[in-house]
Amino acid sequence: MLRSSLADPPADITDATPAGRRRIDRVALVTGAAVGVGFGGLYLLGLLAGDDDVPAGTRVSGVDIGGLSRSQAREKLDGSLGGAWSEPVKVRVGDSTATIHPSAAGLALDSEETVARAAQAGSDPFTVIGRLFTSGDREVDPVVRVDETKARATLARMAKTHDRKAREGAITFHGGEPVPVKPVTGQSLDVDGALRTLASVVPGRTAEPVRLPVRTTNPRVGAAEVNRAMKEFATPAMSAPVTLTTSGRKIEISPATLGKHLTMKPDKTNRLTPALDGTGLLADPAVAGPLTQATDKAVNAKLRLDGERVVVASDGKPGQEVTAEAVQEAVLPLLTRAGTARTAAVATEKVEPKLTRDNVGRLGIKEKMSSFTVNFEPAPYRVTNIGRAAELINGSVVLPGETWSLNRTVGERTEANGFVEGIIINGDQFEKAAGGGVSAVATTVFNAVFFAGVKPVEYRAHSFYIERYPEGREATVAWGSLDLKFRNDSGNAIYIDARATDTSVTVTFLGTKKYDSVEAVKGPRTNVKQPGTRKGSGEKCVPQTPLEGFDVAVDQVFKNDGKEVKRETFKTRYVPRDEVTCD
Image 1 (cartoon, rainbow, N blue to C red):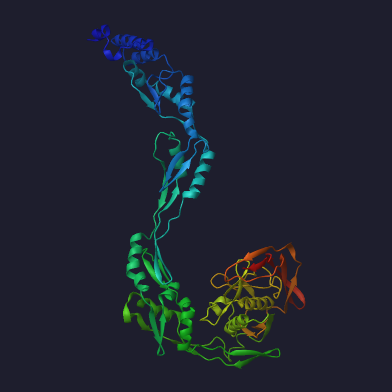
Image 2 (tube, rainbow, N blue to C red):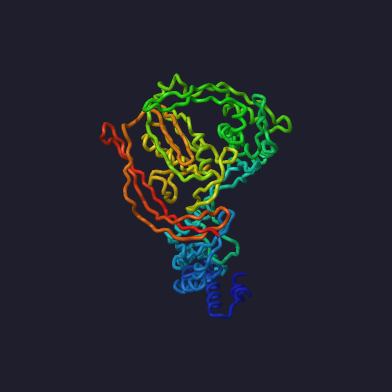
């Protein structure tokens, strides 16, 4: 049978080409020789029979380099595949797609190493012997050369764009409506894994984006928990007002007011649980006003100066007040009820005033610490707003270690709280808004803080300079975004006396001086910049005159026994005040 096949070769190995005839001759030769040799002999014969560097039938990503010398194979691979690495490759990062340019990312075909591996794989004994009897194809993966520095930099930039933090499912409240927050799975690009993936990809071989590996972080609060909380609490909570009763009066609280002070946070089991800010709700003008009429607040003793001596003008008296805890306990159970069941009584308790005739001396309020006055041009809105803010501040008692807040004391500048529309600074420009003029009070308080030598905690100057205020020693406030705060580090209580006329506001701090004196030393204007000219429009536009911008530094000098013991510097930068004309 073997001899017959030699005398009459099968049709599938007949070949009229010279290479084909050589292959047939080799097959006939080694087949005959195999009768008398073992495995080692076959391997030797295979090596002798393989007269090319790259075994016949070898392919790299579909490119046939079989039967070629190494140099020919490299040249063919570079011509057929090398250009692919200059083409963009679509990749998928999690649920988004992007494009990478392999060559810019430091990826390229290494044809020399690819051919070397193909030739080396062809010298395997089984491959060599098998080559004596068959001419079957053999696929070899291309080797990609990687500039790791470039590749990692490219992937790092991609990560910045496509990485995202996990977002917990949540519920917020806006305008009296519950708003579900959809949970989002976090993802981060696995740079090491992405590098290995890209090094194994031949660009242009697939239309589908190459999926790069990512690490995912699942949110602790998922969609199912958000849906449950919406159904069981949030939607019922905002369905109608709740009503509190005290001293025979009813106080209705709207969903919009409730929502401003209501949150839902995950507990230890990641279950969304409601929390009500009783302190914030109690201070909200929509609640504080009606409650004030329904209850008797504790009244602090009123103080005044008799020459240099502090005297009690009127004694304090206790009151019956609603506490933040009582509001929370009364309101929260009502939020999942309906109809008349959304009404409940709120408890009051006796509250002693901070300041009485008996404790003035013990609290250390014995002398004037500081006093400052700001004058202003009379205007109806200024008279109203400055007077109202001074009224709310007057009589404030700040115990040692406490932090006083202007916004918390004065409240939101609304019509319900006694304020009217005036002129404020917004975006380096005058415009009309509620509460205009309160900054004059803020500046007066800031200077009382400055000369009392106590610690300012939060403050900011106006964006451009206003001539009626001292340079570098003034402050502005904005409800919900910018406050004026100081901490009482004097060691004794401070009583704030605030008084306003139609043209001025004066704030005086009574307590015990921390320093004999505090002085202000102002430096020159520097970095002076000239204003521009622009047009404003709209109903809120207010014309303004031009004024240069500049930097200024003010030293706060603390003295005892006439000698300087400490110095602090306040630096302020004012932008130019452009000339504005209104259409």
